[in-house]
Length: 236
Ligand code: UDP
Image (cartoon, helix red, strand yellow):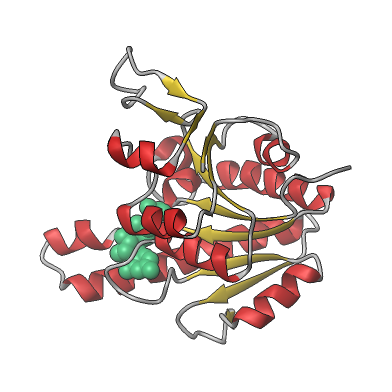
């Protein structure tokens, strides 16, 4: 089987893990996502996963409630670790070999992030779950996803969402929103289409790292994208 992308980085937001509930970790949803990840491994592709934490806490929202912004951001980074451990457990129970690596050291529960080690894990067929974002406040897990993708030399970023891809407007609010199957980085900027947060998007653009925005609820989507099928929106 030929793979268009041999190595990819999947960005799973906290929202994707919360399912219908919108908050917290929905185990049935996480279980389904784990099946998608398992299918990718069965294809033989290397997969890194950056997990968000927005289903538990977001730094900006917590700081609006009065918590110091930097503390709030660290709380957000810890939330990504909670999600990562949940996803790891579900994957391992399905027989998928995994490692969690954290950007903030906490060796009692996961390995510290070391680039060369991460690559070695991928070469051995392990799914590497990157937790703790970038390890720095004022950043997002989108930025962490692009950073890790560049570091592990992934060919594409897979941005999992609850809609089919990029639209001219929010399809959940605007019935006239048009689906865009493909667009350039420049087009996305000029048209003000929020594919990822600004920092993350700029990093992708500068390094011409393609982004696939797709619906995580569509079964087999990731595996199809890696085989070169057009699923969702391709930004490049
Ligand atoms: N965060 C951070 N630095 C990072 C990554 C994340 O400070 O490098 C914090 C930030 O407060 C963010 C929270 O962790 O709001 C959760 O991450 P994010 O909002 O990116 O998660 P997602 O929206 O993907 O669920």
